[in-house]
Length: 411
Image (cartoon, rainbow, N blue to C red; front, side):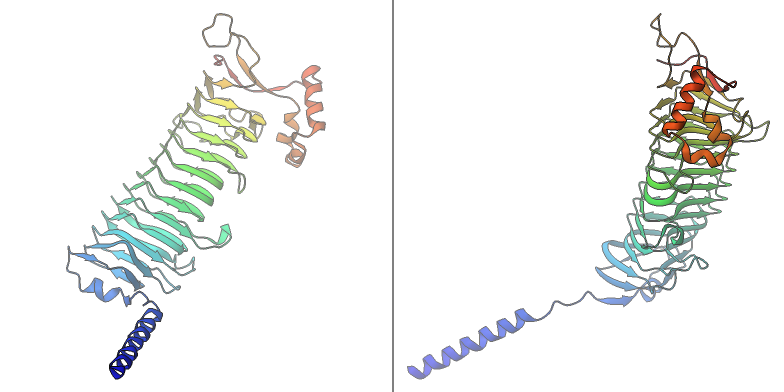
């Protein structure tokens, strides 16, 4: 009896030791395998559904196919090149986690490089990439619901979280871009940017030779400049929110020689300049600026260059340190104004029609000093300048300059 008891105790002890050792084993690392052989084994038009794990790149897709990761498949780059390249037609990339591109601007190292037409890139998460999603000669693609976070470099050394190069008729919507340089469109007409978010960058949107862009309901914050459009006529900028653009030029919206554009219902808050406009040469199509809200900017609007061909109506100006500034007398003088709301309007509305009884004039008094002498800008809004401006208004010792007149100011 005693022998059986002893044997039983020893067996129980051995079982407990086995359980303890099994529990103490370290967790298995996720499997790692090369992605390229799996792509090569996928037939044209097929779907490669990646199991959870880590797949090493770089890799290239050269045929029509679908690559899915359900948010749990990580494609890890080698840190020296583009992670995933597409050179085909109608490729779908969905639910992938892309990591670790190279850091060369010369090679344009990116998380995802697209070439060809009619791609769908949806719900992917890109991190630690120099350039995020790079469209190179791509038409009719959908880029939707992606998140891109750039490398932790200083702003000037970062790449673009989204870059379109000679790419037309693409739809970019509901993406989140963080810690990039610019969202850039170069020589890329007829694209749409809808409901995207971009924070912590240099230019929220950098539009160059890219006419007929539609940018609607985007949210740009904490960038050096919000939207910069150069030589890109017939733009449509509607319902965008631009906040805290205070460096790198500091404009909420900057338009240069982009005639025939519509700037409507945008909100520009706390920027160095709310709207900076360089009008096209004579003969250009009118730019329409209406229904926008410019508030808490250092300068609400700044005009430089030509006399202007813009129509301003139903805009609202609140709590800007300077409402309007100009580069020189005559800049913006041909712009047309009507039905705008001015927080510094000093007239009355005796007939209660919500329109001021007298026109609203924006005059330059002591402001002319810092506008015409850039070195004096440092003293703008100082007590000395405020006193000088008060004295100029009280008893002008030089003729003030009229910048604009709104004959129908809204109350």
